[in-house]
Amino acid sequence: MDEGERASAVMSRRERLRIETSREIEAIALRQMAAGGPGAISLRGIAREMGMTARAIYSYFPTRDDLVTALISGIATSLGEALESATGAVPDNDPGGKLLAWGQALRQWALTHPESFRLFYGHPVPGYQPPEDGPVDRTARRVCHELTRLVAAAWPQAQHLQPADTSWSDLHPDYVAKVQADLPDVPPAAAALALRVWGRMHGLVALEIDGHIHPVAGNPDALHRAEMLDLVRSLGLA
Amino acid sequence: MDEGERASAVMSRRERLRIETSREIEAIALRQMAAGGPGAISLRGIAREMGMTARAIYSYFPTRDDLVTALISGIATSLGEALESATGAVPDNDPGGKLLAWGQALRQWALTHPESFRLFYGHPVPGYQPPEDGPVDRTARRVCHELTRLVAAAWPQAQHLQPADTSWSDLHPDYVAKVQADLPDVPPAAAALALRVWGRMHGLVALEIDGHIHPVAGNPDALHRAEMLDLVRSLGLA
DNA sequence: GTCATTACTACACACCGTGTCCACAGGAGA
DNA sequence: TCTCCTGTGGACACGGTGTGTAGTAATGAC
Image (cartoon, rainbow over all chains, first blue to last red; front, side, top):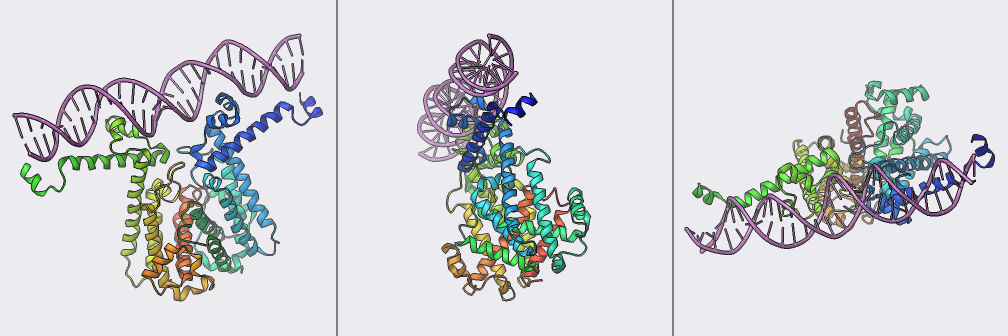
């Protein structure tokens, strides 16, 4: 089997069709979610739209939650790629620019996929949470870690922003381990500051995505830009 | 007792019972929501819990959305009261303290009623949004307005935080009208700064409520406190 | 005390969703 | 060729919303 597969094609026709159908299901689910929130995802609705029997969908995703989990996985990589490509486009000797690009990319991605943003950062499904250490956790940690690196670059100028008595015990052991492994010179206060920066970047975007900025700000773009510039400057990276 | 009732009764016994039942329905709905999210609210479930027929509930709330709307109304006043009482406890000559109290109260309220926080700041029901200019809008605007007053107090020292070219056109006309009516001396840049402060206060709390802080920070309390202290200090109110 | 109103019950119904079972057709792969 | 996989078509149990209709009991006004 292994031989035949490897010789003729990487995947058999069946496998390809199956994956294609899976992608189509996920795409429709994303559309449904964009139209009516996570609760609007319906296996039967997808089946109708695809001209299939509802029963057939269950051979792809045994449960609605499985579909949602798969969706979140794709969303997580999408967000991760957006952030990485945005920061990657800025030279390494410009941490302030990287941080700015990060903030802009986060908002842009959120505005483009608002429901994905909600699904990723909010509660995905009424009552159900994704498995421990799933793609959400991993992306979130990767995001945290990258932000920590960026903030660490500003640490010499930004020390005064975080209480000096911040200790590793104020952080989660897993996070501590990752930081200490990859950035041995970073003190706990810098890591804590990174988390605060994360929160600061999240705030305005979350408000905007949930429709709370629109009724007060006519120009959310400028508002967000001002906040990011202030953030970068406060870190001494202007 | 007829006498006593009639003498002091603004409401008849029937009216009182009806209101009491309404309250009980809402209380159970809040419990259901706290247990399983907004989607877990079920009129039939409430009826079961109350020992009533499902049919009877519909004479109180014609639709599930009506119940949710009523819930949001109560949530909005609860949040408003929490914030107002917190800032009210700090003397007027201490705007920094008021801002700090505001931030702490917001987080405390959110931690106490996480589902209420989500319902108020997130999308309440899959696909449905509350009526325009409902209690949510009104409370949100009142909150915005109060924050604007607090930030306005810091404006002399905080001017450099917001681009000088911020104009009224960067804000929503309704918000502009309210600010200009109540705080005639406040420039548009100060109002925009207030919105940014709002976003900054929202960020960490939203992340924490949605469970994203817990896996990285062992001491969210200290993290939030540091952020609030930094915020107040950056506004020159330390 | 009489009598209408009101609150609620008990039973229908139509319609939607999830998740599961079945027998059976038809194409893909060995 | 023959088997396995994918999908069909129909049924099912169970849950939800929202709407009917008939009847009972208490309330409140006269």
